Every structure is written in structure tokens, then in C-alpha cells.
Image (cartoon, rainbow, N blue to C red; front, side, top):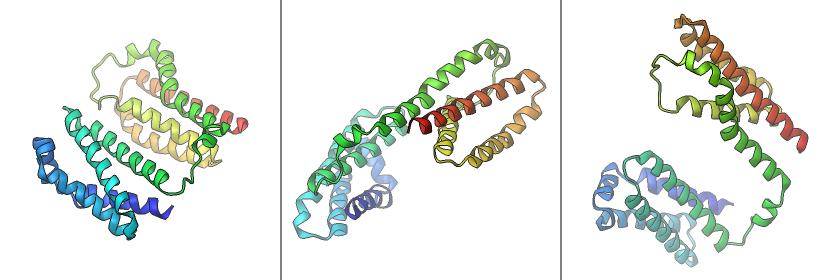
Length: 234
């Protein structure tokens, strides 16, 4: 496991600490013709070799660097306007590549077949999928009869911010329930009340207050019921 930790450390140092902003701009402009792209990849390989400090692992360090090069090139040619999305895709691919190479090169210590045969994995996966996707659609359908009345005026807010806040909110409540930390739900509800207090105080329309309360109770209710169902299933 310590080898995997060192590999992740090498990645974070190489991608964030030893990669100036000017290198990123140069790679985006020149793409595969950028010399800084290859220098960046060499640094990753050297970091892996230095942190592992085993001469026989030179080929493994080369494979890590080569994988990093392929992923970076794919990102440079695939990303268009919305760069933040490709940043996260890029990082997920890098970490996945490190994990796969580590698991293949060294004695496999993770039995993926056994993991996938574990009922707990599917129970948690189903619960997370419901809370992050299905619950939001159900809530939207339930609140549809009031949405037109409350949201008829243009309200300035971040694009899809409410959607992601709701997903995170339900996942946090779910985590508190399955781990038995019910007091965390009270803390989360209090924190949300503090942030929402300004909206409710400034609003002269009682409908907005009722709409927010219904949405909050539905969101918390879905998460609590799902968490209790998972605990019962386990």
C-alpha cells in the first residue's frame, strides 16, 4: 500500500507543484509539439523512480510516464471550451492509470471479482444512484405544481447550483445515517437554515418559504429513509 501512496504523491507533486502555469498554457497552445509536455512527463517518471528508489523498477517508472503522456495528449485534443470538466476527467484517468499499473505490476492485492460479488457494494451503489439522480427527478416532479408560482420571477443563481447542492445534501445525510451519526443531520440542517435565512428574510412571498421547506424536508426524508433501508439490508 505504501507504494501506491508514493505513486499518488509523485503524481500530485508533478502535476501541481512542479508544473508552472506557463507550461500548461504552452501545452494547450502547441499541444503535441510542446517541449514542456515531454519535460512534464519526464519529471513524472523521475519522481516515481526517486520516491520508489529501486533500480529494478525503472521500467515501471517509464510505464507511468508513458501513461501520463497518453492521457495528457488526449486531454489537450479533446478539451474545447469547458476546461474544468476535462481537468477532472484528466485527474480521474491519471489516478485510475496509477491504480491499475500498481495493481498489475505488483502482487495483486485487490480481488475485483470478489468485490463485485459482495452484496454490500451493490446495496451502496443503488442507494447512491438513487440519491444522486432519481431522488432529484422525483422531487422535481413533486414540486412541479408549485415551481411555476414560486420561480416565475427571474432569480439570479449559479447554473445547476441547486441541483448539486441537493445531491451533496442527500449524500451527507445518507452518510450520517449509515454511520450512526444522527447528530450530523441536525448540524447540516442548522447550517442550511443559516445560509437560507437571508433568502427567507428578504422574501416577501410566503410561497418561497413554503417551497424551500418542502424541498428541504423531501430531500432529507429521501436520504434518511434510504440510509435506514441500507442499514436494514446490511
